[in-house]
Each structure stands twice: as C-alpha cells, then as structure tokens.
Image (cartoon, rainbow, N blue to C red; front, side):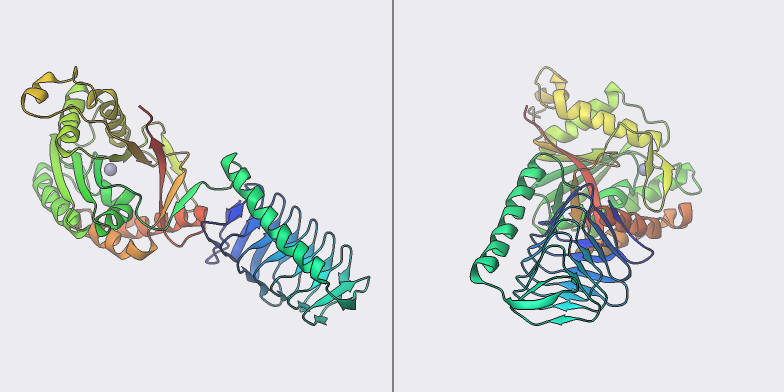
Length: 411
Ligand SMILES: [Zn+2]
C-alpha cells in the first residue's frame, strides 16, 4: 500500500518492484531496480527515506526516518526483520536478518552487519567493515566472498521480483514514462471537456510523439455549467480550441442530447463510421462497468452518459466496426471494416496502466481551461483535474498520472 502523508508523497521508479503487501508512506523515494517485499514498512512521516538503486528490503523489515533522513546507497540488501532507525547505509552493503541499527548511526560502503547485531545510536561504521554483536563492534574487514554474496543477493531479488510481477503480485502493473505506443488514437466521450479531463495528458504525449488524435464527443453538452441550447454552440467551439491545444488533435461533436445518452444502435452506428474512417489502432473511452469512483481526495458518482458512451464504444470496437456484416451502407460509401488493436479505458475500477503526465500537466490543464463555459463548475474543474492527476500519481509513485485499464485485443 502506497500512501501520501499530507504533502509528503512516495516516488517510485517504474522498474522497482513493490509488493502489494508492503506499506510505504510519506517522503519515500525508491530508485530503479529496487525491490520491497511483503510486510516491509517504509515510514517517512517525519523525515525522508531514499533508496538509491538496486536496493532490496526483505520481508517484515522496518525503516523509519525520525531524527535524520535515512539514505540507502546503490546495491544494498536489507535482510528479514531488520530495524533501520538510522541515517545511512552505504553502497554495496548488507544488514543481515534481525539486526537493528539505531538513530544517527551510519553504516559505510562495502559493510556487512551480522544478523542479530545491535548497532547503537551514533555509531559510525567505516567503509569495508564486518560488524557483529550486541552492542555491535567492528570485527574486521569484509571478505571478498561476503561482498560477492551481497551482489548475488541483489541479483536474485531482481530476478524473483520479475517472476512476482508476471504472477500479478506487484502493487502496480505498468507505468509508462512516455506516450503509449499508439499511432492513431480515437477518443470516444459524451461531453466536451471529458477527453481533456480524463486523458488529456496522455493525448498531449501522443501528439508530441507524432501520433494522430481524433476526439468524438457524442453530445452537445448543453447541460454543462449553467446549461441551455445556446451553450451547445459555444461548447463546440471550446472543444475545437481545446483539441488544438493538445497538439492539433481533431474534434467532432455529434448531436445527441447531454444527459440522455444511451448505448443505442444509432449511436453505435455513428461511432462505427468514425472508427472505419479514422482507422485508429487504439480507442480511449470510459470503462462502462462502474457506478462510482473513489480517490485519495474525492468520491463521486459516474455520469450516466459516461457509461453509455463507453458501452457504445466497446460495442463498436467489436464486433460492429470489425465485421462487414454490420452497417453495410457504410461499406457502400467506401468505409472498410476496421479492427482496433487495443482499448484504454479511463475511470476504471481496476486500472493497470499508468501514464506519467508530469511533463505535460500544464498542457492538459490549459486545454481544460479552454472550456471557459465550464469554469467554476464543481469547484473549478481545472483544480479538480490537477488533484485527480496527483491522486493517480500517488497510486503509481509519480507526481501526476492518468490511469487506464489497458486491453490488448487478441481477436
Ligand atoms: Zn462528462
């Protein structure tokens, strides 16, 4: 479990493995190739904890940064049931099972702290030391075979972690630091501003990487904000402005009534025509299978239009756009059947693909702000979107992120 503590938020490199049964809270930074095993607690509520690279925290160990930050260098192994209440463990060192290292103590590089040792507060262990006993004392230099065992232990942890990941036992699945590998993305949403709100950062990354984006907005949006039919034409213009801010994305607004969208055959037919015309390799839309959302900051009910648009888009992805027996009149107009390779569903109760949008958060929020008629709706939607991106970032150890259920279709 990964938790923020006020403004203190864990940051976790995507290559790190964190067991779903570890508890990580506060100002924790976990670097590349680190592993954190079940029952480990990394509590950085008072001070920071930093794991540099290739650091391995075995089961039931407790790291608490109290009076000083706690820094662990490169290629460090912390055994089972260790208590680290100290300031530093240097590069290529190991603290073996059931050892305790107390406040302000510093373990140098290439050190081995023997299992069951008690390192007293403020002890400074010089580089290359073998330490043992209660209270612990330097017993000599670490031997080459001991240092080799630390390296091998680290390697074994990385290999085991990749097997755990494959078995679905990681706290999170896929974290992308750049755009997903999509050349042509079709976005299907019911309202102007939905695309920017739910996946605008990812769309900005896609266009920046040279991808083409087309946004299909199913309704006129006349129930947004203060409402009214004259609002619809204004929202159409806002949607076009917002799409161009996302890097020349195109937008089309269909003519359904806001708030009354249903997953009808008529709607599916129109979306199928868009799919057959634009020929996307991926569709971005709402996960239709849920009624409410809870994040770190918010609890809200999903709009019924969102679920209807998602359901229709899925019905189009297969079988309607793919099979020539659907909507043959479209074929007569030159639109060929098209198979979509994958789906990215937002507002999913079980997201498994996270995209780090920290670099393009400003683009997302600017595109959202282009929907000027919606300013001030539910507490300022730009600020709400920023918080939601931060909440999503929290669940995957990044500053700001968008979350998707990613479905790679086999057929
Ligand atoms: Zn909406």
